[in-house]
Length: 208
Ligand SMILES: NC(=O)c1ccc[n+]([C@@H]2O[C@H](COP(=O)([O-])OP(=O)(O)OC[C@H]3O[C@@H](n4cnc5c(N)ncnc54)[C@H](O)[C@@H]3O)[C@@H](O)[C@H]2O)c1
Image (cartoon, rainbow, N blue to C red):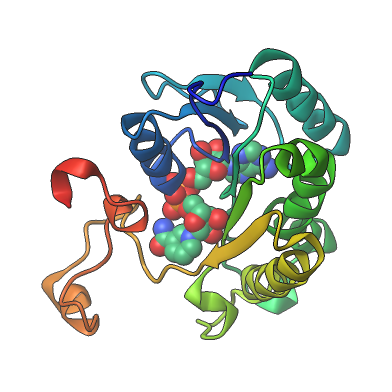
C-alpha cells in the first residue's frame, strides 16, 4: 500500500445529520469514506453500507467489507445514535435496551472488530456523545445513560489503545438536524448566540 493512497474513514449514522456533515468534510479533505447506516446513504463520493451498528454480526460483516474493499482503516467515527423521550414509568426495557445498544454497545462492537485494522494505520476513533451525558432534560434517562457510558467508554479505550490508536470524544450541545426550526429565544439561550449547525462539528472548508 502506498503512502499516497487516500486515508479511509468509516462513519456510522452518516446517511444524514451530523454524520453526513462529517462525511462531506472528510471527502472534501481527500479521504475515502464508508458510511454505515440503517438507511442507505447518498452522500456524493461515499460508499454506503446498510448496517445496524448494534448488531454484532452486521458490524463484523461491515468491518470485513472495509478490510477487503478499502484494505485499510485510518478513522472510525462512532456517530449513530438516537433518543427516546418518554416518562420512565412508560419506558419499556426493550426501548431502554435499544437506546443503549445503538448509542453505546455499538462503539464496543465497532472498535473490537476494527482494532487490528486501526492499529495497522495508527488510526483514530472519534465518538459522538452529547452534553446530555452531564446535563439532562426530563424523560431522557436512556439517552443520558448511553452518552455518559460513551464518555466513559471513550476514555477507557483511549487508555487501552493509545498511543498507537487515539480515541477521542466530541460532546455536542444542540445541533439543528431535524425538527422545528429553532426560535430566536432558543438561539439566544446559547452562549454562541445560536443553535449549532452540522458544519460546526467537522467544519466544512467553505465555512472555515
Ligand atoms: N443533533 C443534536 O443536537 C445532537 C446533540 C448531541 C449529540 N448528538 C449525537 O450526534 C449523533 C448524530 O445525531 P444527528 O442529530 O445527526 O441524528 P440524525 O437522526 O439526524 O442521524 C442519525 C443517523 O444515525 C442512523 N442510525 C440510528 N440508529 C442506527 C443504528 N442502530 N445503526 C445504524 N445507523 C443508525 C440514522 O439512520 C441516521 O441516519 C447521535 O449520536 C446523537 O446522539 C446530536
